[in-house]
Image 1 (tube, rainbow, N blue to C red):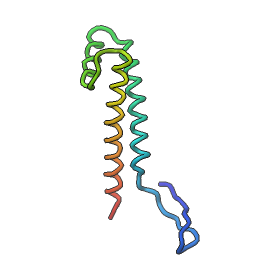
Image 2: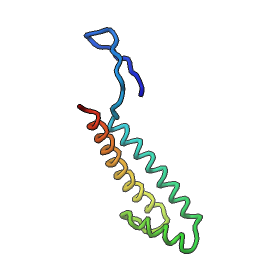
Image 3: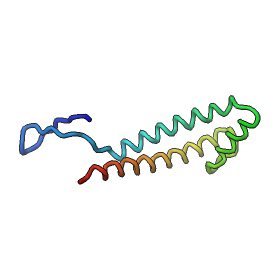
Length: 102
């Protein structure tokens, strides 16, 4: 746990324990992490061959707009991954913050 010193009107310094997550910051970090993993997975697909490459491509076909290893497929997949990671990240941060309330 981190400690934060903040200035308040009642006392000169009030030390509070920081336990809550910021929804926007956590969701954006999830988006960045999701995009990094998505890009690494796309690059990894170029090194596969045979049935492994076919399985890898069939998993990517679950993403809307994905039709092969090209730039537009990567863009549509990146948008989809960003949206899902942002929604899931915001949900996780919200659930974490709600669990801390008494």
